[in-house]
Image (cartoon, rainbow, N blue to C red; front, top):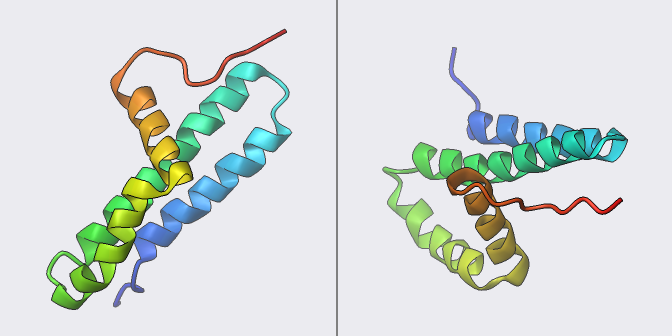
Length: 99
């Protein structure tokens, strides 16, 4: 059976969406923080899965250049990437809980 194009990326997109829904429903800070970090991981995985699926497609890389640079200049995308890196590679908190 042939897999659908970008099936793995769409699976991560659905997981990111579920994380946002669960974050909205969460009542405890720890649960919100966990879902936030899951969301950030899913976003990064979406990008990685799309890249991996098209690694041998030269046309994709030409098209992708615009979006690759967008990830480096768009303030929201830069922020999300930095926060994701902080959650993945450091012990610092990315959310602050104020009672």
